[in-house]
Image (cartoon, rainbow, N blue to C red):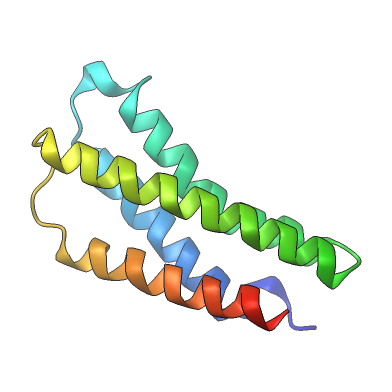
Length: 113
C-alpha cells in the first residue's frame, strides 16, 4: 500500500485542517478554549485518523479509522457553519468546497476498502 502522504484522502484532509487552522486565527480570543479549540481538534482529527488507520495491519481496522474521520468531518462541518452564523468568518466558499470534496473522497475510499 502507498505511504499515507501519497493518499489523496490524506492530502485533501491535511489541506482542510490547515485551512481551518488559518481561518480560526481570526476568531475572538474568548473562543480560544471553546469553539476555536473544538473546531481545530475536529479538523485535525480527520487526517490524523487516516494516518493512524493506514498504520494498522488490516483493511478492517483502516476502514474503522476512515469511519472515525467521516464523523470528525461531520463535526468540523457543523462547527464551521456554526462559527459562520456567529459572524466569525464570511469568505468561506473555498473552505466549503474543500469540506465537500473531503467528504466525497473519504466516503468513496470508505466504500472501496
